[in-house]
Image: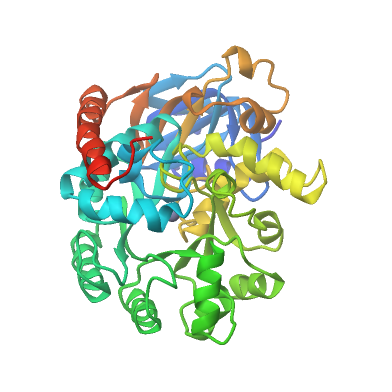
Length: 468
Ligand SMILES: [Zn+2]
C-alpha cells in the first residue's frame, strides 16, 4: 500500500494529542476515488486516491484509506477520473480571442496585419470582452493559471479577479505608439501603476511585458530589468522567436544572438520569462539555464507560423525552467494546453527521430510543474502536495476516447480533449463543476464577444483588408 510519509505527518500534526487518532478532521473539500497524478518530484500516482482541501490549500494527498480520516463539507466522488494540478498556460494574449480565425495565413502577419489592426481596435472594452471569453475557454480546458502580455492589463486583471482564476499579467512596453501608451516610457509608467494596484492581490501577479528585444531599445530593456528587481515582479518577453528579431539584434549588437544580447545587457535573470525561444543554440541554452529564467514553449503557434521548432526538449532535459503555453488565440488558436499535448509529444519525436524521446509524463510535467517553474511559482502551484495552493482539475475518463486507460499520462497526451475537463478548482474554490462555470455568466460573455465581431469586421475592412 502506498502511503506518503509527508501525508501521514500532516494528518498526525493536525490531530491533537487528547483526541483519538481516528477522530475525523474537518476539511472543506474532499476529492475521492481519483486517479491522482500528483506531479511531485517522485511523480507519485494514487489509484482510488484522495485529495483533501482546507481553505485555499491542499491539506492531504494519499490513497483511499485517507478518506475516512476526514469530515468534509463537500465531497466530489470522481469514480476513477484523473485528478491533477491545474494546468498553467505560460504564454498568451487572452484578449485576442475576439480576433481568432482572422487572416491565419497572411505572410508577415504581425507587422503587416496584426499591429495595424490592433492600433485601431484596442480599447478597454475590447480587452475586457476578449479576456472574459478567453478566461472561460481556459477554465473549461483545465487552465487555472496563465501568463498574459497585452495592453490595458488592469482590465484583464478585473476579469481574472471576477472569474477566480490565477494569472501573471504583463503590461506591454514597446517603442511604437500603442493603444495605452505613446512610447516605451509611458508603457513603463502604466506598468508601474498597474503593479502598485495589484501587488498584494492573492491571485494576480502584475508584471512588465517588454514586447521583444528588437521592439525596445537597450536602455528600456535595462530599465525594465532594474525595475523588476526593485519591485520583485516578473518580466514577460518574446525572445529568440524570429529571423527578423535575430537580424535586428545582430545588427544592433555585433552579431550576437538575442539571448546573448539580453545576457550581455544584464536583462537575462530569474525574473524573466521568455516566450518561444526557437532560435537558440547550445551556448544560449547554457546562458538560459545559468540565469534561472523561465521559458514558455508554444508548439502549435510556432509550427503554424512555420517559424520553427524550439529545442524545448533539450532545454527541459538540461534542467531549464520550461513549461507549455499556447500563445495568443490568433497564433495558437486554442487556449488550453491540453490541445498542445499531442503536438508537443509528436513533433519533438519527429524532430529527434526517436519514438521514445518525448514520453507523455514529460509533456504533463511541462504542463504543470515545468510551467510553474517557468513562471517562478513552483513553491505555490504546479503539483498536488500538502501545503500547496489548491489549484486542481478533474478530467473525465469515461468518454469513449478515454477508455480504456492503462496509462493516464498517455490518455491525457494522446487522447484527451480540453472539453474532457469536468471540474476546475482554483485557490480551494470550485470554479467549474460538472462543466458548468459557477462564477461568471458564460452565455452573456459569449454573446458579448459575438456582438463585438461586427466592430472587428468593420475595422478590418476600413484597413483595406478582406475579412478572411
Ligand atoms: Zn506571444
